[in-house]
Length: 238
Image (tube, rainbow, N blue to C red; front, side):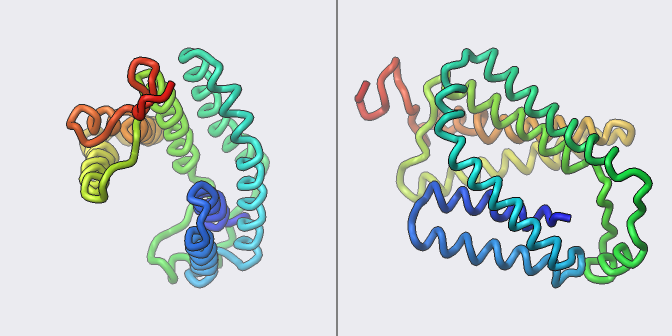
């Protein structure tokens, strides 16, 4: 409680629809959120109350983000690079701290055996509501994506426009990089005692690749243009 899948669906797909801001985007986002939420109850890993609570929390996060983004973008944009990276680091650590705080709040609570049995029968995989993996992955991703984007903006930014064929090539190359980082690093560093550290590091590197490494590679290969060139926008406007 609440369902993380339902919560994230509203937050991510709702924000995506808001940014695209077209009717089909809103319809697609709504259908996706409904499907994801209902699938959690169908698979037996959540009660419908968990799903509805997830939708509610996601809606609050979505509304808060839409309202706060313009203000935060202005304030954070005025900070120097060191300040932005420090803020990203603090936000990353805050995610881990929130996980530890919520874990401490569970006290001596034990997961009912019926929950584990139902989930295992429906999905074939055991569930672990106390697992820190998601928290460490989210924390690492927060640091990597935020820091990478801050550095990229200092280096002229990145334009994601262009013909469909060029976008497809960028997508394929970008996904290859993510797969190599996510799975290649895990295979290369088989250290049981450092699993959480590894999850954090590979999530951070994946985030850095998405917002810094891949865009710079696309620019270098002539698959994309910089947003700013010597203080001027790519279109020539100041």
